[in-house]
Length: 85
Image 1 (cartoon, helix red, strand yellow):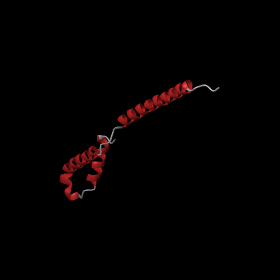
Image 2 (cartoon, one colour):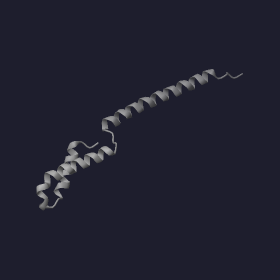
Image 3 (tube, helix red, strand yellow):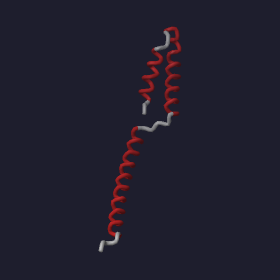
Image 4 (cartoon, one colour):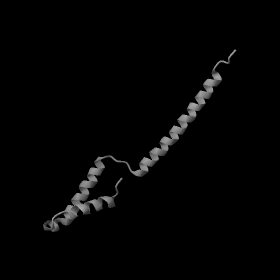
């Protein structure tokens, strides 16, 4: 996800596009742009990279456990199957 520095850089770019006649409002515009960008990103309900990585690790462990359980069930089914004549 974007951090505060990224949002500040985008806000500065937007402020640089403001006509020179509005230079007095430069700081107010920068603050407003930063707040609007941050609020918009929060509404997207994005997860951080750390949260994503944790969930990927959890999914990998779960997948490995499911694979192991499937293997054990197959072994048990094979052992319980009646022997041929």
